[in-house]
Structure formats: C-alpha cells, structure tokens
Image 1 (spheres, rainbow, N blue to C red):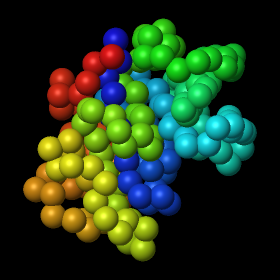
Image 2: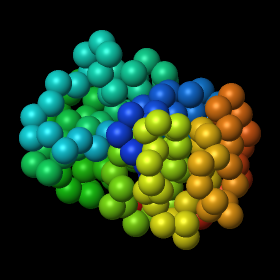
Image 3: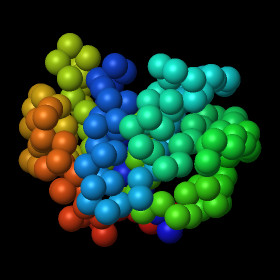
Amino acid sequence: MPRLLYIVGCKHAGKTRTCEVLIPPLRSQGMRVGTLKYTEHDGFDWDTPGKDTYRHREAGSMATGIFGSRIFAFSLNQEKYILAPHLDLIRIFYQSIDLVLVEGYRRGAGQKIEVCRPGYSDRSIAPPDDLLATYGENLFDYSRPHFNYGNEALLAAHIASNIHCLEEV
C-alpha cells in the first residue's frame, strides 16, 4: 500500500513545481510515484496543458488524481474516472504505488514537505512536528532538514531514507 507525503505551502509558493522536480529523482530511487492534488474548487479542469495534474503526469507521475470537497478524479493509463471521495479509492487507484505526493492538502495528519518562497510564504503552514523537511528558501526556523532549490536529488534521498515514517494508507 502507498505511503503519503503532503507537499504544502502558501498560495503560489511552488507546490506543483516541487512535485514536478521531485518525481524524477524519487523514481530514480526505485520508487513508484503518484500524485494527488487537492483543490478548494467545486469543479475543475484537469489533465489539460498547464494544469497542475497535467504537469504532474508530464513529470512522470504513474497515477494522477485530484480531489475537492465533493468529487475525485483519477487517471490510470489515460482512463479517467469521476468518483465520490473516500480513502478506499486511494487504496484502489494507488495500490501499485509506493509514494503518493499529496499537493496542497494542509489538513493531512502525516508528514509534510513545506515549500517556502520569498514574497509568497508569509507564514509557516505546517506544525514543526509534522515536517519531514522544508524546501526552497530557508525562511523559517523549524529545526528540521532544509533543502534549497536545486537540491532535489538530496531531498529525494531524504524522503527515501525516511519513507518508513510516512503514513501508510
């Protein structure tokens, strides 16, 4: 069953970009990586050029999904499903995945990577105890490992070596 890692940060801090740059080095670590995007919108376009889920898939996500308060959508082998949200669906659609990067869902109870970007990250998002690491600019003193832009391979290695700490679905 997959493990979950939440990618969080303020609006426009670079969460989608973080997923994009983490997928290739995580896959090179031998992991099967999927993504799940959280949206606060009731309706959404997805898997279209420029959209976050499209960018996830282009970066190499093996299973891509999006969820909001009322609906889910998943893509496996280019087949699309619109479904009602339930944790069992993650177990079904991501059953062959080792790690799911959950973008933008702050309320998740598991470990998080907080993305920090000057001009956008005006406050910390995650409680320090929930952080596996921070990524981007070192804007807040968390006493947690920090990885600057350009160090995605090191961040991926840190994630891989701590995968046992991540919530298993």
